[in-house]
Image 1 (tube, one colour):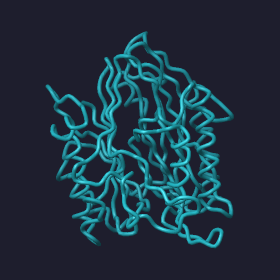
Image 2 (image 1 turned 45 degrees about the horizontal axis):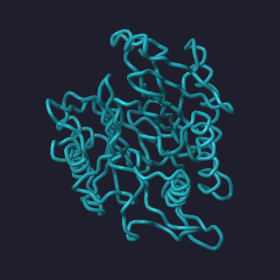
Image 3 (image 1 turned 180 degrees about the horizontal axis):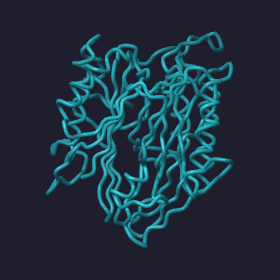
Image 4 (image 1 turned 90 degrees about the horizontal axis):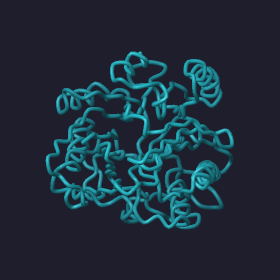
Length: 363
């Protein structure tokens, strides 16, 4: 199926940037056994190494495995695509006069120990830091980030304090971002998994002269990095930090424009709306995403809207409760009948959220 899709879109295998596989696995042993089957198959199937992220989020359609492929169109000889490896981590490096240098790093992971998300988050960020430094980058070069956190909402007692896995992760992320003097935050998703500890995938770049990266925030929502203490859970171990991401990130080069939309939910201001109503939460979430590509929002962020007709073509949808899938699907396909959707079952970053959705829009 993948080769057919590649052929239909005139894309070579070497232009695959990353694979994200969603597997039905609730226990660490089952998850590891599935990884041991899947990763060799990927290596056998492709003639070169591809960054692959395997996530313990069951496909909502009942399958054992679903896969999302990110690939670069064939732009000509100026673009150089390389598979790289550092300390056992495979990543892609794309270079060219028209796009600068880009890194695609997937599935940098560390399982939990007795500190749950604390040590795992530190180790994963340290691994990413090593790759970025090797490529003459730091965390300020990231423009899209996916954060997968086992039992994201679980609270634990550490050092006499009640702390939440997601809040621990946010605190550690802020420390590494602060060290790199990050001032503009990337588009990001923070989502729960059933096992696997902490896993992060990133897209990062050193832009060339004709490239542009712009963070975009939603006028309907408080920026996540400006949340009040009211929506942060648990006691701080070192410093209680807000989630450091923008609602979207705009990228353009001479080759085209892409609008990366972060994981989005039924939040207005900083409050969750439509409690216990999956249908209404889905509708509000999609409206929040539509707001981001409206001319007024784009222009406020410095994005030119002349001759632009942005269109949603693909969504990744995280569904908290399997029983809500049919009603969530109905809303999605009614509002975007021509788009494609990938549905997985996952905990969302707030107890009262039932759905989260992300997307990328080609302008």
